[in-house]
Image (cartoon, rainbow, N blue to C red; front, top):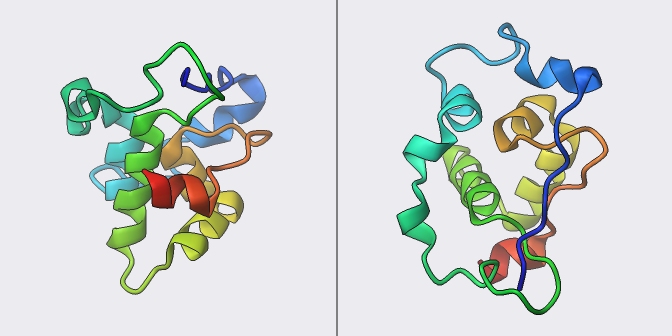
Length: 112
């Protein structure tokens, strides 16, 4: 499956990179600004998003970031995590999702 291309963040999405939105040093800030270091490519070798055929798959970093956020809050369900990612601007910023982008569904998170 090819990897889904997330939309390039535009000027309207500047709120996602507002320095006051996420406190420096927080988990949300780390996921937004240093995702490549926390979740290197070698962790996702073999993820089905690397294939050239099939439907689009979410980038593994986005799914792993959502799992990390899910477990950062105690007793958060997969469905609850996807709903929070859809409604909470701090989680959207940490996942690097634009405002028009819908977050991964619970099934995508479960299969990952």
